Length: 421
Ligand code: AMP
Ligand code: GLY
Image (cartoon, rainbow, N blue to C red; front, side):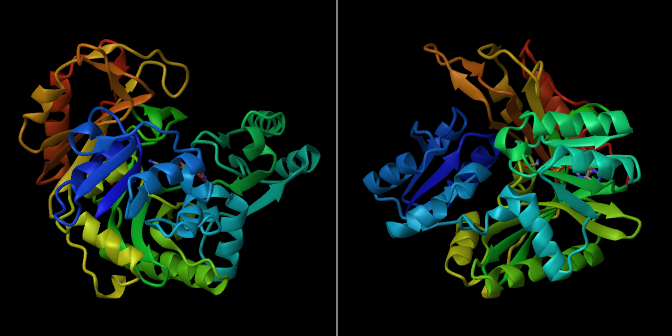
């Protein structure tokens, strides 16, 4: 089969790396891809935020299956568009992608399906939002309703911060996404990510992981897309995994099917493990990045067969197997990220890092120059992933590998996997 992956991050590199050993795939393509992905797939430079460019490419290359990595093509309805031209795709429809694209939609599903989540209210008028702040407990969480690349969430410790966040959102800081604001109860606890592979009716767990979202050591500084992750997380016991599958994922699938938008693809639950049990912070409709890197390097089953089973609605008979090993990944990012950063600085030593047994370096924002040097080309640039018997050994291995990489303009967190359990 001819397969087209969409995306250019370390997540998509891990996906292509994993798919590249499938005997069922005769040609693996990735749009737009990156120099790391180019080792596993043919990279084709198109704009994946533009549905018609994807459709033209898929038709021209006679693609049998499209696998989007990031949320934007899904929220833009690429699955529905591909369906119109009879091309199979792995991922939710535009309507089902609202589980990520609209917090308001997800909150309504939570209410209908009885899914535990933080108490919240939506506001489309600044004054009413400010009034609500004045009458509720601090800290309090302010969120833009739509997609804001992980940056639309402010945890306000005091009233001034809360009012400032509301004003910024209504003044257009998050564009259209911030025209409706969600104000939510602050949840205290440890975060965990749970992934399920779904075929519209059935869901099977795709392993869990813990992400490190803040930019700085000790969980300080602003939120990022994720600075590192490990899988599995000891915080999610077998009982909790069952609880999440039965009380979050399954009721969501039932509710989505009931309203005529069955969910096919990866459902990613971002959870807060509070003293009153797990609560849903958000749904995403795709793999997490960097969580994908640690899940796929642990996967024993063939990823492509698992994806086909979800697309063909036959997950009921599918078993996903994972190695017992732990995987941990450390993200190297450009100085300044998640704010402004410079690109085009040379990175060396990636091969030396990859030569360490148990280590795989996934590329995100990289490019090459005319002499084939690897240059930085984005915020998050590399994801150094190590597999070992336990978290501690995987940490040591990942940081050993990072020492081999020479990049004057990059930084990373020193404490990935050092969370308290
Ligand atoms: P979200 O974009 O909704 O996933 O939020 C981004 C991050 O903000 C989460 O990963 C949490 O670290 C934090 N967060 C979001 N909502 C809450 C909440 N209600 N209570 C505490 N932290 C939260
Ligand atoms: N690592 C968080 C995300 O992919 O949304």
